[in-house]
Structure formats: structure tokens, C-alpha cells
Amino acid sequence: MLRQLFAGFQILHVVLLIGGAIGLFVFWMRTRFWLPKYAHILAAIALLVGVWCVSITPKDAPINKAGTIGKALLALAVPAMVYFFFLFYGDKERLSDASRKLPMRLRTSSTVS
Image (tube, rainbow, N blue to C red):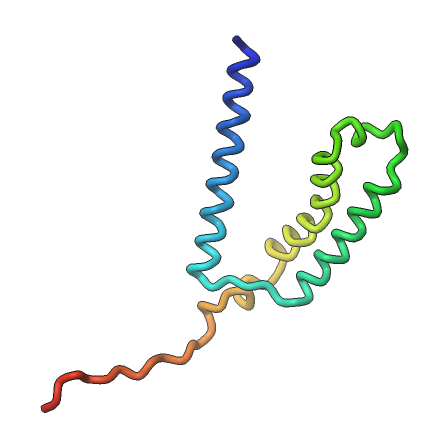
């Protein structure tokens, strides 16, 4: 009974996490949030470091008990840290396109006086 309750909480946690991620991406699309190219380059380098760290783990390391998914999550944790620190310690005004002046469309009048 208790195991089923905790399994239900885990499922609820995953559903809330996925819903929050979708909401975040919708918010980013509405506010025209963007990251500069060098942030993605740093994250790609961090991914390579993460894959390298997973590849050099010894056979008796605890991460090997987690299987392929655990190793992939460990490798993805390093670029996630890069994005986290870039977003929360970076310049938020420069990251939002909404703060820039966008070209406005000319309004045409359909009525002739």
C-alpha cells in the first residue's frame, strides 16, 4: 500500500515537471526569449565533458547500477548546469527580445475619405 502511494507521488511529480517545462517553453516563446550562440557552444562543450566523465567511470561505480538512462542523465547534468548559471546569473535584459524595439507594421486605412 505504501509503495503504491509513493509510486503515485512519483508519477504526479513527473507530470508536474513536464507541465512546468511546457509552460516555461510557452512563456519563452511569448516573450521571445533567446540565448546567444556562445551559450550553446559552452553547453556543447559541457556535454562533451559530461560524456567523457561517464565514459571514464570505473566498473564498480554506483552510476553503472543506474543503467543507460542514469548515465545519460549524468552526462546531461553538466550542460544543464551551464544553462542554469547562464540564465540565473546572466544579463536578463539582454536575453529578452521584448526589450528591444521591433519594427512596427504600417497601418493602412481601408476607408477612403
